[in-house]
Length: 318
Image (cartoon, rainbow, N blue to C red; front, side):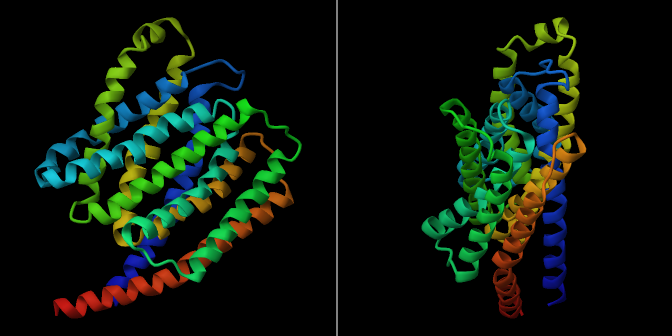
């Protein structure tokens, strides 16, 4: 029971830590793309590629340490996790943030638990209960309260809707990845999964990056190195380290609990937006409170279930 309690505390600690790291990541993406004067630093596709290459290089030593644990049955799930959990979202978010503010991009992440619980229920037999549904509704309402405050005076055109669609596609990718990790890679260490998944997307990203004449641009464009510095920080802390922690969180909790990190991200993203000149209203504070309430509700019964399952497993082993 003590071990289960410690796991619960660790899960909440990782949830909050990841919320801060990923909430700040959207500001780093923004700074990687342009400076305050609007000067272009990196193109969206270059940002995504550099992010994946650096993250995979950081994790490469761990891959060589743990790769022997990978069996043939693990290869396809690892590739899916790499593409959906890391590769595709890195490019999708970079393109989306050429049109969307970092705070709004963070808010749209609240759709991850919706996709996650749907996939868990339809594909892996997860039993959806009333508190899950009500908590998800709270999360959506909270996210849209914030979004309404941001967008109430904006008339969206078709071109402006495309970035929203890209972010939603990225959240679907995240939901697919965390379910694959939870249900098909349970016998692998989090670092094994993380390093192998990044290698799966890092090599193709390196090939693509070299095809964009990045070397020539580094030599001729004065602002590009600033973008590389920001994306390097994003790749190491916001990608490589954060994804490892997230994979560990999935291991010790559930896809639903792990995906609820996306409810806290809008709060953190909005706070960072305020620090860098974006405004915040009481309406948005209300939305944040609703979001947090949704997280607490959606996970209340699940935590109890996790403790019970742990106790049963301990009795069986005894």
